[in-house]
Image 1 (cartoon, rainbow, N blue to C red):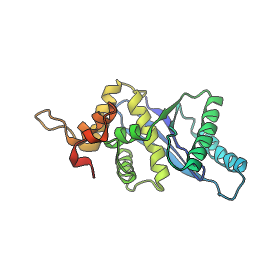
Image 2 (image 1 turned 180 degrees about the vertical axis):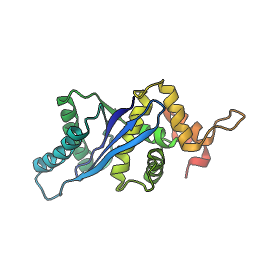
Image 3 (image 1 turned 45 degrees about the vertical axis):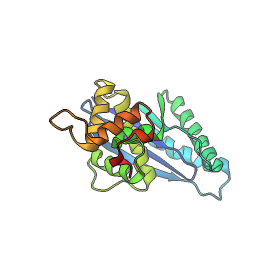
Image 4 (image 1 turned 90 degrees about the vertical axis):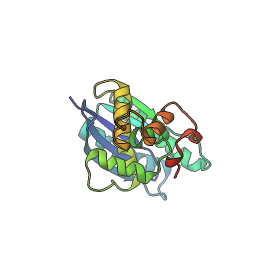
Length: 211
């Protein structure tokens, strides 16, 4: 039986919300995706209200079983971090009110699960999301693709769709780079993916993927 996961790419100006169904064989199907926006000239409390209504609408219409949110990480732009943290808190509250389990995933975790490379760029992530979901185009804007990537990542990394976590990890690497050669050696993307999972520094990633 498939599980339904809602992924949230939090942002105060644009908040990506994506929902996928993931089956036991790791195949994923798009349910819905949207990007909720809040005008920068609105008071903060009204912006948060507007975004919360968008998240609630997706929660109530599609009734996901799990929620995945991008973990807030430090960066130079304090204003961006604050906005991301504020809408993340709203999303956590809305999920808790519905009794839904929530997991936070770092950007590198999501990139590693989706592309096989923990430092992939947004275009690479979007391309793999489209491939995984069988879409003819990359979901736009990037916030939409990122939200879907979060949902897929959560199902694959935690094994909630069935099977072991290691099996889902192997599957994600294969989607990124194809099956390993007949000799059993790992492809560069598979090696990069495993390095990212172990928390290895970027310097240890195969040179062919540092582009």
